[in-house]
Length: 342
Image 1 (tube, one colour):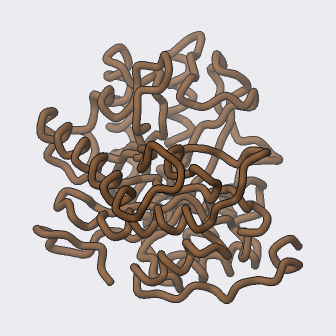
Image 2: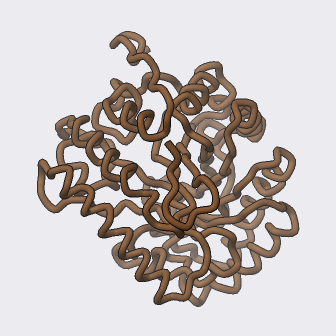
């Protein structure tokens, strides 16, 4: 089944996100098997998420962490493997913070120094994306505090530099809302016209109460899509919107808090996760401006579901079969407990 709606001249992207920590994880046999599982689901693309780090919210230096960051060699391997399997690739370098705060609250003590370091960081991946013929490069993710008008020129200069180095399509993954005290989010971004695709991570709530019905979840999906459509019209946006991250956790009440992370004390509810995916995948193709989606997220080893019973991964959960049915693929054979935890 193609995720296409009225007015589409081509199939829209059916993507899955893979994020890995560790220098060699992405070149392991387990990661290769995971990519093969993604392809078997019917995915047409994979987003490879790679983190470099800064020490705290005020730092001005961004660098690879020898223990946590995927090496360029391993990222290149994953790109090659995805292409070999017939999938397109979005390369998505991200900044994370060692003090464990959200990247959207970064406030560097010297913005010029920070953008200089950030430009070198993105340039490294732009060069890799060109060498590996990556189809889409994401130039930033959820940098809420740095999206305002005072930094517009810095982003435009960065995008111009990336275009000189990389010939493929560019996007930016904006947060779905402004974030407490950050004044950021997709409405705040001032440089959409310089990119090829408007990237949004739409973790909008689908319900306002526990145990929502299928009809309520579908209405929730259509509601936030209407919000984006109205904004697109009001802002004069004439580019397609790509859902650069979207997914639902498998804890009770996850449809009310799709952005929620793996936390202790949550009750697993894989059925609610599956119902949320059913609602989203049933409605995603209805907007002609939608370029596709990248589901969040798939772990770089098979059968990760039992290790993360309340997390976002759909692996070894009912949501996996929902995705496969909508995308015309096949879900992997469920694992035993031992296989999932090894």
